[in-house]
Image (tube, rainbow, N blue to C red; front, side, top):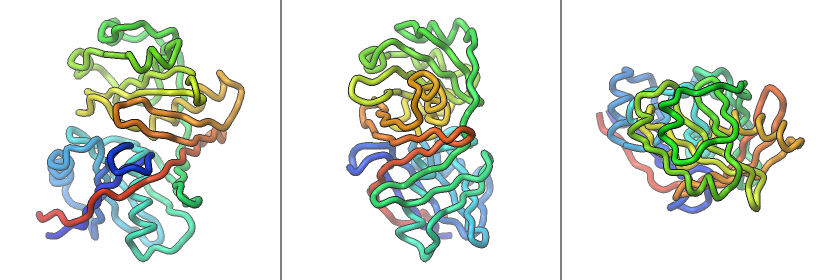
Length: 260
């Protein structure tokens, strides 16, 4: 079997920045084991698998370790491939997923994700999670799958050095750390050793938690956000109440085939 495969860097216009995602265009679903092996072989934060269903597309996402419920950058990458490298000619893509219906449309050089907003609530986290961090957050929340740690400054986010091995067996998908930005509205990083990703370069899905938080905190609905990983990335976000719009640029790094 020969599977069309693309590697796309999302939330950037540079082939060496942003978050790389694998995109596999399938005629029919492979077994879960085979998709997990492919994701493990790719060794990227996420590999997306897509099957066309009439005018829609069903999408699934795998880290090297597990299948996840939602991924922003691999959805952005998938939309980029569908719009540019298939015969699809509608103005909007509708993805069917484990997290419901996800829409993507194109606006000049940007691709806009429309995702459901996360609901976060204040918690007292496990002491083992706090002990993994070299600094103490000022606020702590939990959403559907992720912890959200709020810090005082962008500098603290840049200097955050968690002991990732202490987090590998904690609950949830990962931990978002965030603070008000110096030159943008807010900044963040995302650590997910629980899912096989020590630090994710740019995490679109984390912004379904971040945007509602910062909308309430800053009293506004439109944001420029930076993720401060070594590769880095820029996201343009809008809070729509029960939905969040997350826009970014993408660039193709490679294309070819996977042989099974």
